[in-house]
Length: 381
Image (cartoon, one colour):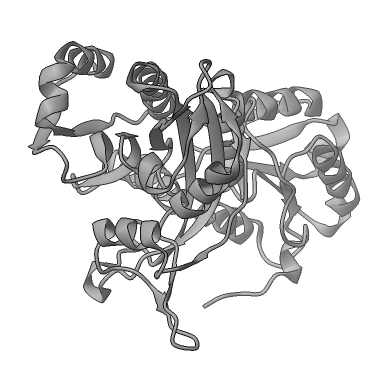
């Protein structure tokens, strides 16, 4: 949910309009059938009453159906629409791999409607920059694959060189003949996992074919109807692959001798408060209340087990901040905090709240999804 919140916040800053569309489409409708042929055989099909439907493999069908019904004028463009689309692809059993390749996933899918190719290329550059910046924000270095038609490469070579300059490193080019696909350029951004293998995540492409296929038009200033250019983009790839990247970064940390962890904003439990003895429960719960009121995900280990076991369990759950409350903490009204990968610090609660806010910054926040009492949670074996 936090990753979904984050993806939505990014596209809101781009002034995209959120929409919600159906997951099922009639395969007998011409444009859908044509588009499905380009995708291939990996579709889930439903066949009620001698009709044939497919589950969407991306948000294109629904968003195009909306755009077809919009009265678009030239002054409305460029127009951005966005959907966090639950999508379905019938991957082969041997290809399914954790979060990296699944059959059902959530795709933060955005389309930009541009009046002509020049406007589309301007928007494309902006989105390219956003994708690079988003990867850099989390310390990820993407490697780009440019799928491009031969004609587009020849006609807009300077545009391509400009993109490579933004990337700041060599890119791979895969050149295809014109009119095979609906796009003229389709860039895939690949993340390198802990095993050194590439995984496609973010994408951005310029589509010159689907506006005509789906009869999407805009009204120009002279009153004539024209087919727009469509940009497809998923700035972070699917939510599942987005999460995969964070887990892979944790794996890389472990290989480098550090304790694996998620960013604080993404950690299911951000703070665990551990009392040394039952007489410290009241003070500890007061700390829990204060931290909860500040919007942090904090829980309380009230189990009747040893302190060392409680700390070990919190470490194994990748809790970034472990607060131990004993006689000294109660007497001096301070907190002793184990900061993951950094060690012990002593500080007042106001300073700890500042530390937490500094680590979370402007990333989205959500409350704890389960009981604050560790003793009340089910144990999975």
